Image 1 (cartoon, rainbow, N blue to C red):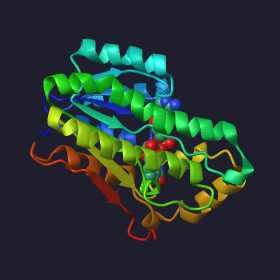
Image 2 (image 1 turned 90 degrees about the vertical axis):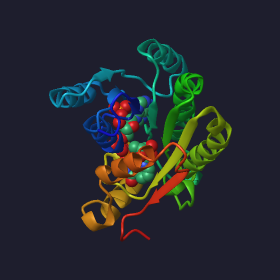
Image 3 (image 1 turned 120 degrees about the vertical axis):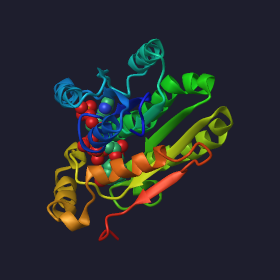
Image 4 (image 1 turned 135 degrees about the vertical axis):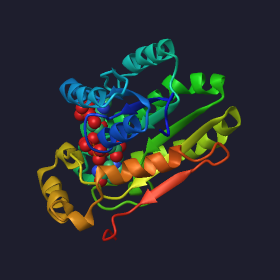
Length: 247
Ligand code: NDP
């Protein structure tokens, strides 16, 4: 087992990439801490993983709630700390900037940027004290490019990539590795977060239903495992994963 004795905290574990990553980590012996807002989903996953012999903790949280994330950070310390953070929770209510959907901009910035920072803050000191830890931030191909309607989302993902690269440079001398994972299109529930009806319809009809044009959440979980399983002198800074047919 690759991660026996390791404790991993996965945000956004209730669906998609986080769900697949939690399963992959538990299958490799990690003790897992599952976070998201939908407790019912987390409970179903916890039952499945415990039946397979995994040690599982449920920590429902809204990652954009700073006070709740600080309290959760204290509980993680009490648990003995975290060896691995899969900083994955995210939302994508995209729309043209010129439509001015300001509440959705706030939501993306709060969840995709502040939530990522709050999670880093919750685990970093403990990792640095123990001189070992691995933070995996899930950004996107939208951390490298952008397209109409994706401006604010891409802005948040560019920010996550910048945060990852900066943290990698700051933290590596304290024994903490950082990896930025950049998936292309993955078949998950993410488009359900698009509030703009026309854009949601376009996103779903362009890619969804065409299996060859999309990755599976397990493909990204595999990339996460690859980054985590490298020997301690190797830090996979970033991984960009495309579906074969995505341009
Ligand atoms: P899903 O919608 O399936 O999963 C998103 C997860 O984030 C859910 O578990 C959701 O849980 C959680 N989440 C959302 N908002 C919050 C919040 N405020 N607090 C806590 N948890 C929250 O989508 P994906 O699996 O695709 O997304 C995972 C990550 O991958 C995101 O960061 C996304 O931007 C990124 N990504 C996805 C791509 C794709 O094509 N699918 C491509 C590139 C990157 P809950 O609703 O229960 O809180």
